[in-house]
Length: 243
Image (cartoon, rainbow, N blue to C red; front, side):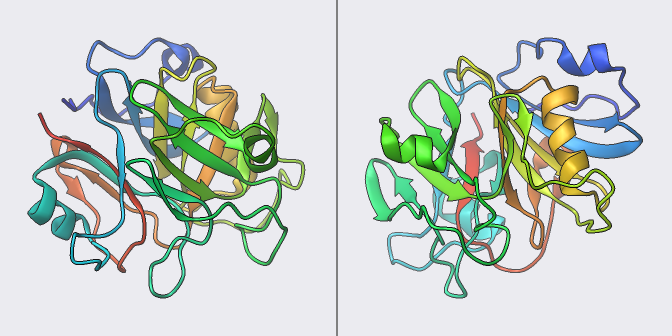
C-alpha cells in the first residue's frame, strides 16, 4: 500500500529515519532546497518487479498499458535506458530470463559514463551493484536492469560528478540499503545536477549505493499521490502491483 505524507521541508534526521510500517511509501520531500518525490519499498513485503513487454512481444511503453495487461499498480517508474525500439541498452532480466546481456564497456551518453550499475531484484532483496563487480561475481537476480551512471558507489559519489555543473535535468534513480531490505526510488520535481541528485541518496537518504535511471523521460506513477506522469513511450518499467 502507498500512503501519502503531506509535502513539506524535512530535516535531515527526518530523511534518515526508518520508513513507516507501510512497505511501499511515496512522499514528497525537500533536500538542500530542491524538491523530490521518493517511494520507499521493502522488497520482502511488496512484489517489486520489472516489466518490459506484453505476451504479444510489444513493449508496454506506458503505465496505462501495463495496468491494462497486469492490473492496477501501486507504484511504477521508468527503469533504465533503452534503444529506439525500446529494447534495453544493457543487462535486462525478467522473471529469471536474461533478455539482454551485460554491457561493461565505456561509451557515449550517460549509460557509458563508467562506473555504471545494475539494479538486481530477488524475492526479498534489492541491490544496486556496480557493473564490473556484478560481472566478477554475478548474483542471483530474478529481475535486473542495467543503467548508468552510478550515483553512489559504496558511500562515495561518482568520481566524474562536478558540484557546480550547469547540466541540470529532471532525474530519477534508485538507491538500496546495505542489507537489501530497502529500495528507494526518487524523482526530482525540477532540473537538478548529477552531484545534487547523488547527494540526495547518500546524505539525505543514507543509502550506500544508488543508480541513475534516466533524465530525459523520467516518469512516476503513484496513484496514492494522484500522480501518473504522461510522456514518451518507455522501455523497462519497475513497478509494485496494488494489493
